[in-house]
Length: 277
Image 1 (cartoon, helix red, strand yellow):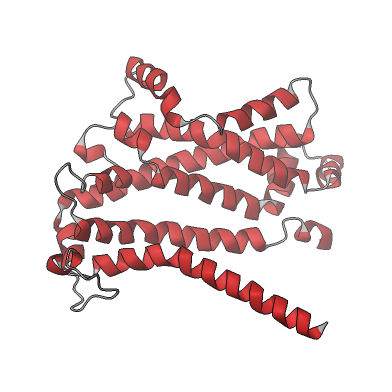
Image 2 (cartoon, one colour):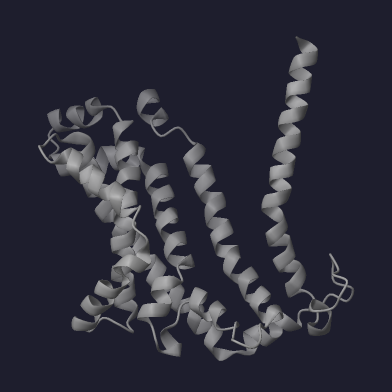
């Protein structure tokens, strides 16, 4: 039994190690490319570490005045979309978890179906609608689209979190004189803080990384978000690998930090505080 257990653990750790290498290697290669001088990037044979590490790609990138504006655009759009989408999903997830009504199943199915439809199928009608409202080439319009994209899945996520919280908590709060909304925000929301933060980070990262809608709906260079700006390093005749890799490194860092934060919150027991309290 001990031998079988030891062998099983070794196999498990070997598989996890291989998976970790496969996962980390693209990130390592981006950093490797960002630290190489221009002449070494396209040279053969390939080098797995720069012979003469340099920060010239980052310097070229930061000297472009539009890059900081691109970061600001992404922060504004992703932060506003994630905040509003999370708040709306909080209310709709609560309704789906706590109330029973005739079309509840249909609403859940509709939310799930929206996740199966490719974005390009709705692009034509979406573009015409946004044009008719004068919301194309607008950070506000792009934020509205991201909100609409994030709300269905966020609602499903938060509904699952609400389902793990005992009804007795809010019932006790309502007996003590709270209204239903007061019970929600004073009692349930503090317990669901990890789930709400995880949902917010999910929405933020999705909006931060989205390219297809951003390229379609935004035309002015001063309103372009980070993914569209990265796409600008690729032309029909050339790819600026150095600045592209440097920009990718700077773009990935915030999302990596947020995923690390999300892991911390998700791991915590969502209802442990309620049971202990």
